[in-house]
Image (cartoon, rainbow, N blue to C red; front, side, top):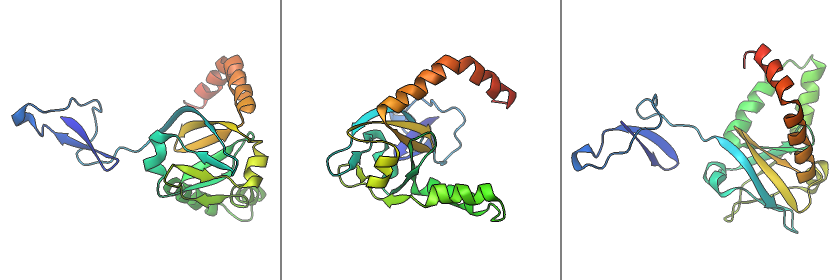
Length: 182
C-alpha cells in the first residue's frame, strides 16, 4: 500500500506501480483509499515584518493558506491566524452560542471586532493591520508557531516567557491535562 501526493492532497494508491517496481512504502498505516489527509500546522518559525507591515508566512504552509486567512486577536497577547476553512468552522461554533450569555457575546466581540481577512501575495506575505501589530507588540522579528489547525504570531520576548513558563510548570500542566483525559 502506498500514499501519493497530488495537488496538496494525499491519497492511498495501494500498490500502483508495483508492476514496474515503483512503489512507495506506506507510512500512514490506516489511511483509507482516496481520503484527504489534512494539513497540520506544526513547528516554530522566525520571520520579520517589513516596513509596510507585511509578514511572510512559512513556506511549508503557503499552499494550504493560498485561498486566504483571517488574522485576529488571540489569547495571551498573540495573534491567531486561521485558514478560511477553519475560520468558517470557528465562526459557525461562535454563532451557535446563545446571545443571552454574556461570555458568548464577549467572545464574539473579541474574535470578530478586530479580525482581518487577507490573501497572501505571490511571495506568501500577508498585511498585518497596525491595530493587530500594536495589540501583539509586533515590530520586526516575530515567531510564528503552528498549532495543528491555526497559526499564532508572537512577539519573540513574549513567546520566550510562554515557553519558559511551560518548561517550568510542565509537570503540573501534564497532571492537570491527564485529569481531563489527555
